[in-house]
Amino acid sequence: MSVDLYEFRGGKYQCERCGVRGWCVGYCAEGAHSGCNGSAQARQRVQRAGSHLFRVGDPFQSLYVVRSGSIKTYLTSEEGEEQILGFHQPGDIVGFDAIARGRHPCNAAALETSSVCTLSFDKLTKLCQSSPHLLGRLVEMMSRETLRLTDSLLLGRRSAEQRVATFLLVQAERQAERGYSPTALTLAMSRTDIGKYLGLTVETVSRILTRFQDLDLLAKERNQIRINDLNALRQLTGEIDSHAYDGPAGKIAML
Image (cartoon, rainbow, N blue to C red; front, side, top):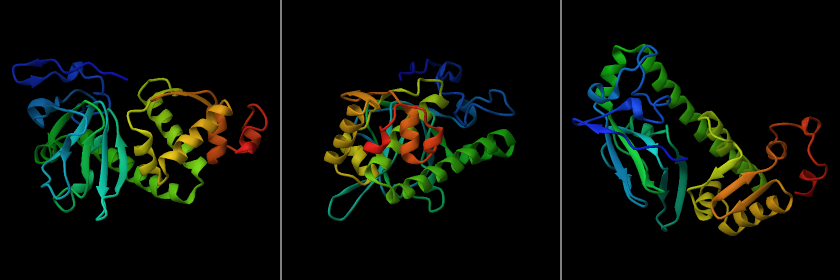
């Protein structure tokens, strides 16, 4: 899922050329283009794989819109164990959780070479005063982030198979929202990172993906996954019941 880089002219990035402008809070004001550059003074930065946007305790000054690539947020325990809090893809905003205390409560690092736009929070809040549409969009995105965190907490009550199936469905739904195929996934995160996010070992994640492949629910090759049966995954997670599923009999019963 690649997006062309911004065209840089005269010190400003041209939002009209941005592939995720439809989801960007800087690209809206009363349903028309307000221009985040110049108003919120957005600046693009490129993050190499493994580099950090911010670390725990850094002062909060800006929100970050992922333009291309992907970012993970995580914490590290005293024992050095990493707990991944979330994966952020093009159109997502990183940094909401730092607003209340004025400091970042987690780390954010690029999973791959990524492009992000830095939005000054002070300038963004001032812009919201004159743009109800922008304010509403910002609140909506904050609400989505809260729901995402709630859903991740509920994952702990599910079986390992349900966690992996839910993860794949979320990736599929997010791609569909952005106009991409929900069945052809390119996962920037490693199996280890997926396991850390789901609370599973890397061996368990790999075993379940292989089992899903054996049941023809999906086909996988490295970080490429093609979902063959979305309804079977939905039934496994409880999104649809067995009466609504008309796929090959016995798939879910074997899990």
